[in-house]
Length: 474
Ligand code: ADP
Image (cartoon, rainbow, N blue to C red; front, side, top):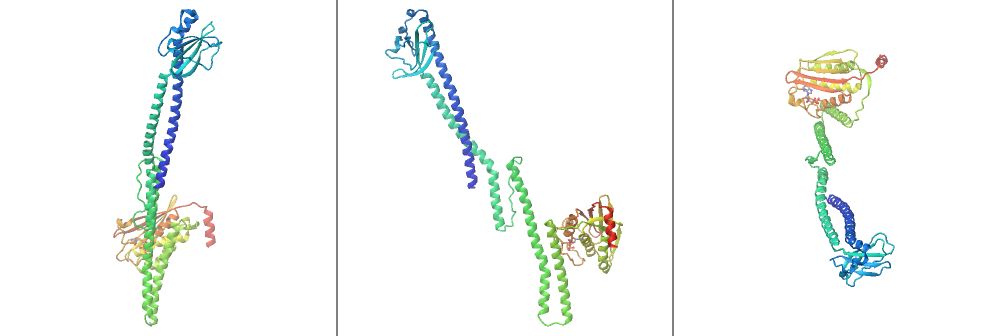
């Protein structure tokens, strides 16, 4: 906050200084122009006042007696070629209008300032009389023009101060409003940092109010809002994932602990040890399954799910997966019907695809009643292949359907065989399909059954690479 304030004052001071320099220099230039034109105007007045007198002297010296002149604020002197005063107007009394410069062979009028203790400041013109060795000197007070210039100076100063005050006010308002989003951003960032430090469960980021979405600061605020919404979501997912994972691991671990404690509490017979070891083995398999699943998902999240792009026949991989679950399905009197297109070449990771198909087959067996059928279909379409797993099982309600691909999401199904993956199966299937740039669709009706369709885009490979591989495997 202190920094923002300092920046605000610095920006204000900069505005005020710039405006002060600009206004002062334009005022000064205007003042110079005005004083020059006021002076030129006074010089013109001197010439106008002197013209009839000079004309008369030029016509006839004695016809006009300069010493007779007595006009207010107009002082005259007639000089000879050496600068000696021949006549002076009556209002001059004994005062002499002296000039630093004068010359007998003057052709143009000469102007100078002069200050006299009695007459005050005067502007003087020395005008040569045409065709005569005489000079007419005329003086007029500069009082009026000084007053105009003085008024201008005073007004300029007042206006300058008022303009600077207005600039300071406007800039304070403008800079304050401009910096407001940055202040909000700083405050939010500080709150976020404190929430992270104190593991506060509230939303990480209080969205900034974007007043002007089109300007730079508005875009910055929106970018931060979007960024933190994502970070917040990712953090929540991570927390949820860690808590779900520890919850899932806790159950088999406590079973293991209970079983071992029980069996060790007193000497047992071989049968009892064997029975306990079977339970332990089952729980260890579950643990391994969960840990492997978590590892696959963690790799997928980090974008490090290494997919081997190798040429394979998808119908073969699917056939292998069906064969693997056949016995388990038979044990539950569930038949698996295959409708697989032949020689469906594909480029992908055989092990992962095998795992993908097993997940759907496993689920179809787990969530179906005995004496039902699972239909596996493999069809090729232009540019992609479609694998369908249709069962006549319990089905999934629409409320749960949108969540079944989430990690650890499970729907408790009456009659279902105990789950092995602990709610990770479909999340892993999704990760594997995505790694192959594929998608999964789910349709389901409660009491009728479910249909999972995997759509995998086909990468075209030369036929020979498949034939080479086929020859090598034979
Ligand atoms: P798990 O099977 O270990 O519970 P999954 O991620 O594979 O985990 O499945 C999530 C949930 O989706 C299951 O708990 C189940 O309720 C539902 N489900 C998945 N496949 C089917 C299916 N074929 N029929 C009915 N429900 C299913």
